[in-house]
Every structure is written in structure tokens, then in C-alpha cells.
Length: 222
Image (cartoon, rainbow, N blue to C red):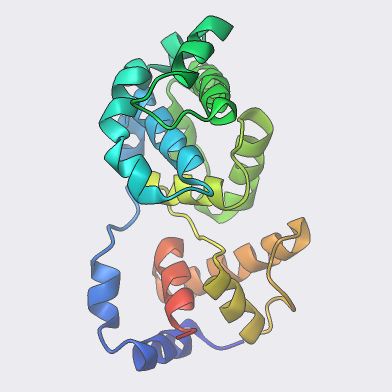
């Protein structure tokens, strides 16, 4: 397994503008910044990632103002009490993508956000307190307590929210195989744990965030 410096050098060979590519992405937020994010913004980002999964992201982006209006600003305490009639109304609402399963997932995720917020003094507090080296554990919580929050959807949610997250994309998986961390794309619980440990080690070794390590791994593939 190469050092992170070697992997970064390989990425720079493929992409001479590596520094500019990395600088174009905001780094992870501080714990204080995560705590300051209101619960409704966590649910909004969660919903955006759920609806983007398996869909054209540009369509969700174009309709996002409609989502904000239809879901009443994503107040989790309000949405968590949406009835079947509310869900049926949203399924007919042309301002959004009318996917009944994902609309129902938003209601269920609102309950999760509201519950964790009550338990921890804010959903942002819960997220800020979770240790970065245990992303796999956080993903397990989101999968168990939320809806349609597994795999890449949950990883993108963490990254886009500003949590220091790796994303096990196809290119990252290929880099991990190349480095001998895993022998095939990391999809099993054991392989994900092994991949997470390697990424955490590279982050400690380099002083970079896990998010940056993940991006460099992807860019090192070509």
C-alpha cells in the first residue's frame, strides 16, 4: 500500500490541475459549523440526496424551489406528522418529482431527524459529536433509523452536508483494490470497514481530511 504522498503524486500525474480541482470543493465543516445547521436543513439535504439517487440530478436541482415549498421548508417536527392524505397530496404535486416511496421516506426521515434532535439537543449536535473515524457506524445508524439512507445515498448526504466523509465511488474502489486494501469493490460490511480504516490512516498520515483523501484516491485512477 502506497503512502498518501505517493497516491497524491499519482493523481497529479493524471491531473496536473489537481490542486485546483481539490480547491474547487469546500472542505468539511467544523464541529461548530455542523452544530449550527438547523434541523430543517439537514432534512432538506437528506431529501435531496434520496431523490437524486438513481435519477437525473439536474432535474432535482431545477425543481428544488418546488420541493422547498411542497415540503413546507422541511420542518422535521411538522413533516413527521404528515398523514397518508398529505403523502397522497404530494404524490400529485407537479412541483416535485412524484415518487411515492421517496416522499414517504422523507416523512420517515423527518421522524428520525426530530427524534435524534430531541435525544441530542439538535440533529447538528448529534452529527458534530460523531467521530470522523467511525463513518461506518454513522452510516449504520442512518440506515437503521432512517429510510432509503444506505450505500452511496447516505455517503453523499454526509459529504454534501459538510461532514468529513469518504465516498466509496467506483474510482475510489478501484484505487483501494490497486493498493491492496480490498480485493474487489468494497460493498460488504467487512470490506467497507477495511476501506474506512485505510482512508483514516491516510488522513492521519497526511493531515488531510477524509473527504480530500477520498477525492485524491478517485483522481489517482485516471
